[in-house]
Length: 113
Length: 115
Image (cartoon, one colour):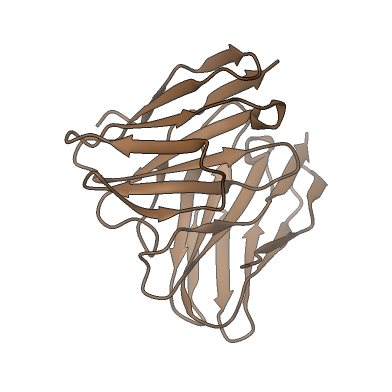
């Protein structure tokens, strides 16, 4: 059974703080790692797809890094804003990709104004 | 482009009944995946359809089934409903093969409550 772990489970930060959270996944048979943001009452929305060890992606104030050798990815948010409040999900794809994504349980971020 | 749509959005059923949920993917997308989310759990993969064929199946009992039509619309069916089937059911479509590096585009979900 594949395990994708995310930590912490939840996080409360003040507006303007920078924060980061972790996604751990099996380091063998790696193919891709996805990050999604899921705001309350909305659909999960893709942030990044990462495939290469050492990859770093950025979208505005949000960035992510990937270490496939040790099986982890970090998501960073710089200068958190209330609109960043959401659950952040990571999902792991293995082998050649025609296998389903395995999702972690998510990190729930609350940004307090 | 219109996004992924799911109907109905909310559903209340009683134990023992059956239910059918519908998902219309983004136009041109051929892969549709279904997920179940219950409190405290991540998205649990149910199955994936690609060009009308079930390509992957998650670890769910046979009461959960699905199909995909030639226009890529997909339905999932749950028979003999149990209380534990109460959940948010999400479908997601992707452009080509699904999984891998393809971004999945999610619908708003169907909230199923089993009484």
